[in-house]
Image (tube, rainbow, N blue to C red):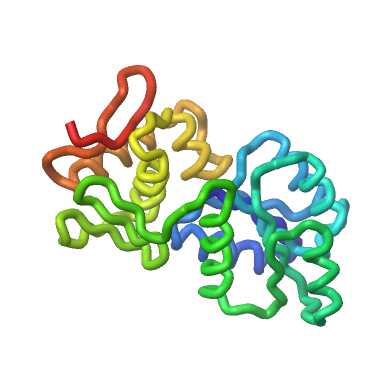
Length: 220
């Protein structure tokens, strides 16, 4: 999952960024509505975590424009206003969910994952491929019933491959979804993560390379 955090309070933005990355979620952060719209025009995000009171282009207007752009991303709106009228208004703008500050971080993550499962394809909470299972809620992977301990990036790459259900995903696609905008297009981090993922999942290999195309899950 790739999330754009739009938050003008720098401390809060850093907290959100660090916490989400620990949950194997790829994060980019901006501090105003105008920059958020610029990023959304370039990058393919799954979620937008939008503070309602960001400067420049206000969060309400940014929400309207995102909806008008016809993007597939979901919007979770954050605000210090927790009154029922504010929530109704925020949802009326087109936001998919609304969370008032202060909030518990586990609830935020749970809401993001719930939205991700609903967009735009149905995402089951437990993914399976052959004898590999991935509990996306608890972030636990097992093969043949034995737990496999993976890093956040390995989890992110495996989840993308499992959701592709045998389809080939290019290194560029994996880089776009599992890393943030700071990762250069010519980096070899995808290859390195796939290498360690294969080693940890063991034999017979389930992560395969499609020459000059990318990576996919297969049993043969």
